[in-house]
Length: 84
Image (cartoon, rainbow, N blue to C red; front, side, top):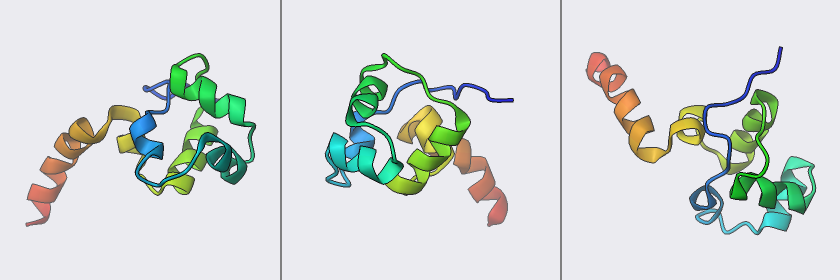
């Protein structure tokens, strides 16, 4: 069963550091450029399978994609503390 990820759009800040254009990201993900545009604008939501592809292409963790950098860091803090 497919489920929606908690964060239904791609943050432009995820694509920008990699220097990828929408067309380049779309090509790497095997989708059309207008789909990337729709994801970034929040016009289209994506499912877990697409989120996994996006994480792989952008080399980010799923938590970062779902919650953004600040919340992902906060969510990882207890785990890091336990490792010490």
